[in-house]
Amino acid sequence: MAAVTTPRVVSGMRPTGKLHLGHLMGALQNWTTLQEQYDCFYFVADWHALTSHYADTADIVPSALDNVADWIGAGLDPEKSTFFVQSMVPEHAELFLLLQMVTPIPWLERVPTYKEQIEQLTDRDLGSIGFLGYPLLQTADVIIYNANFVPVGEDQVPHLELSREVVRRFTNFYGELFVEPQALLTPTPRLPGLDNRKMSKSYNNTIDLSDDAEAVKQKVRQMYTDPKRVRADIPGTVEGNPVFIYHDAFNTNRDEVEDLKARYRAGKVGDVEVKTKLAAAVNQMLDPIRERRAAALARPGYLREVLVEGSRRARAEAQATMARVRAAVGLQY
Ligand code: TRP
Image (cartoon, rainbow, N blue to C red; front, side, top):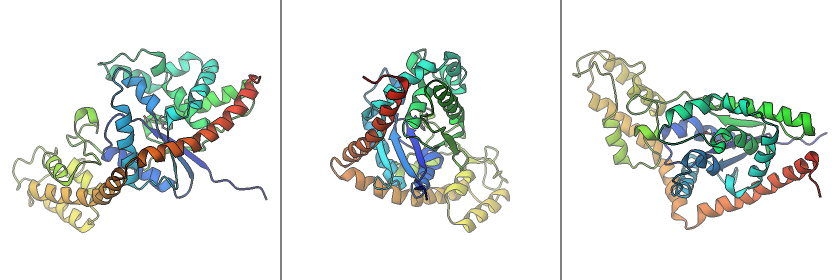
């Protein structure tokens, strides 16, 4: 019987600041579930951070270490998954370069995130080759490990489509070298920010995984809720109300949530009670994350060690792939 190998999962996160509840629900919880079943490689996409943060790089390494502490807080385990840093595996850049030879520029220009980001991030010049190449570098990140699955949010699906097209084109020239990766869509729906806009660090509307209990209470107190309810005895709307979206997402006491919804609809509960209970539920959910995060941060050198060791493992895999790729391209001396 042929040996059955565990399918491989690869995903990355850009180290551009603190991680928040959106990262937890949109990525980390899913990554944590996947590590029980798959051979998972999770990495700090520091070169991807540079594509838009090239003008101020001081935050990248501190963000990387802080983010990895949050990964561990969320339940990811470096004994089960391989954690690494993209720039510590320079073979990603070599493969990226080879992929560029066969990738038509319009394939990159028509990736939806490309024009969107250029229009949205008007405070910086994204007219660089590096930024245009973003999804192609992402392709290299994934295929260098022969990843079968790539857990990502919906916005990243076109990047994976590009990856598969590039793999097919590379195959046409040099033979079959890579697995065509598949997106694994994160099952949880998107959480709104505290102000009911899209959750984003730049809107200052996030609850961060590193926030303490008091910060969570204050943020929840200021959360956007049904604006029609200027008094507690006015019936309110639960659907689409961020306070209740958060209750549904984080409050494990379902009876309490149903009771609050019923009284909210009837105009029989004040916002203070609804929000106090929400803050308690969020804090209860965050407590074990905070504990694991603090334990990881309390060990001097631990996070760096995890990343060095994981990057060594990842690099051995990437080097094996690149030996095959160089031979197939005809660059063997
Ligand atoms: N583009 C991804 C994001 O913004 C981050 C990323 C970089 C990534 N390389 C990757 C995700 C490879 C999955 C696989 O979320």
